[in-house]
Image 1: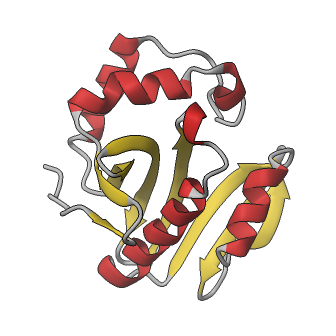
Image 2: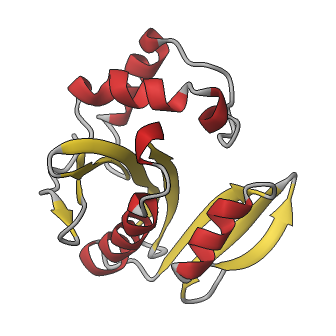
Image 3: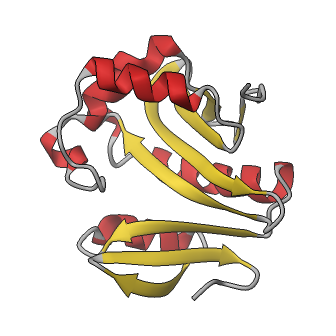
Length: 167
């Protein structure tokens, strides 16, 4: 069963766990042509597949997907997953912004908050992410937030944050 996480944020954005009522909104964001190209699985997803993923996600204790809100309005999503408490590590990602909210800094704030959540709340010492080499905008954002390139493989860049960066 998924651990309850109280909403948290930086005074501008609030991150709260995604609920079933959010699925249509985030699927609409995810299925946009200009968004899905940045996901490893870039096919359009049907709602029933998305719902099946969500029901599976609810059973995972090492996976948290957050809806990002500003003044109660949904503006994006982000996640931390594959949490390994023994290794003190996790992957961050699933960053996605509502199209009308792009360029307002909400994903940068979300990235900073998910790092803070991982390092301070979960007490993890190492976070990493993978980003497509062509996604220069995201790479700049992750670099600003303290992630460092660790390697490249298959068109992806692995970036790490924290101790003992993996190779």
